[in-house]
Image (cartoon, rainbow, N blue to C red):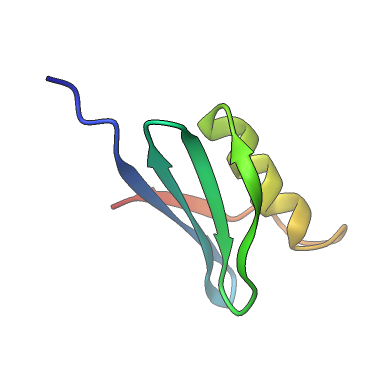
Length: 67
């Protein structure tokens, strides 16, 4: 049986900025200090892009670490 759950933490220059949670329905983004930030994403890459975009136009892309 495959485990369809997982969590990736987004790490920026100042520390953890958010996380991505996977379940059977897709990927949910959470930005720390803002709570859940919107709908589900169909892929991990699209969720990572959403985290990066939410950080603002000049923000460096965070590193994503699986947990």
